[in-house]
Length: 271
Image (cartoon, rainbow, N blue to C red; front, side):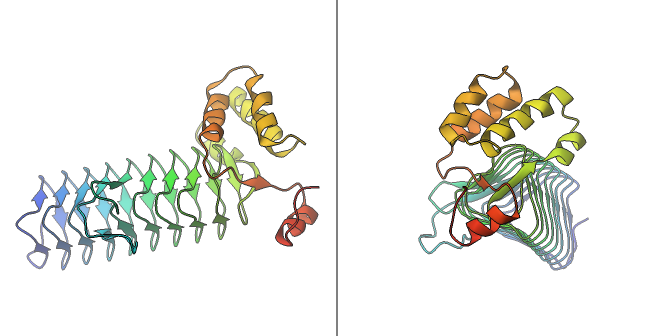
């Protein structure tokens, strides 16, 4: 059902069984797939494409121009996949460079007041909790969990099945399967998330070995990579290795105990 109080541009394309609530606004050039529900007071901007069965809740602003002073009002877009839930007052901005897009995959859950900046790439089954802020060009891989009030620096990558604890700041890449809590500090593997995803015990053991080489040894990153390459091959080890080798910002560090954490905060490093 489409409310007669909604404002829908004639240039918007709505497929069958779309619901649009009171006072929602849909600009021209928007494409909305079947069985999408747009709640009252949501605002869908030009250049946005929304896949089937996605829900856009009250007050969300989807596909607005990027918060980038270099933006030249060029033609950019936002592509949202299927079965996403985007809650109240979330904001997702379209790309900033001509012809570029922000891309949201399938089955994601973006909670209230979360923000996804321009040119971000969000995989599938990602959870972004209340108040989390993703700057431009952030990439989040499948099944990652970003807790409330997390802030992620532009160009960072969050690996698959990684978890970011609440109120954390992230300024480097977070490898797959890791749990980060604090100012870019990897604490452990995301064991709860791995079990919930029904990852096999042998795969979890491989991930623990990768964590041990990276964060619980005296090896530097290059040495840790060499050590992991000597392990029995597995999909999980391969994924971690490819992620690290593809990192441009470097991966997040770790600490062994509270004393070292205090040392890092004071400007020191690992002993």
